Length: 102
Figure (tube, rainbow, N blue to C red):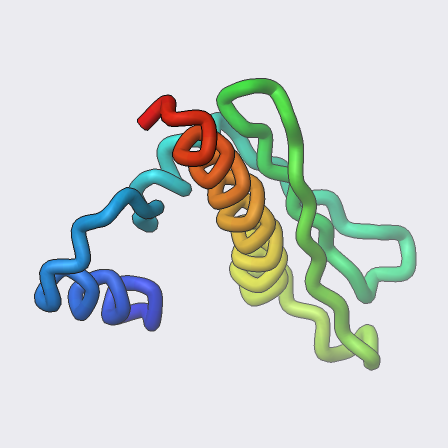
């Protein structure tokens, strides 16, 4: 079980129900993803396209080309891109709360 899922279960168990983001909220704004290996053979870039057309990127790199594994690189680069969505969606939610929209 991922740390994110464990934390979400703990939040729910404690009844913390004020406006907030959930992992499902983050996943819901992702409409597509692409993975691009860079020419060095040591880096993979993940681009996530969000529902509003904005894109975020994350990368995974290795020091030694011999250690590059695309499957692992996909997981790490996607996770790094997804972390950016938490910040963006958090800002958006805070703005809505400040404006009295929610």
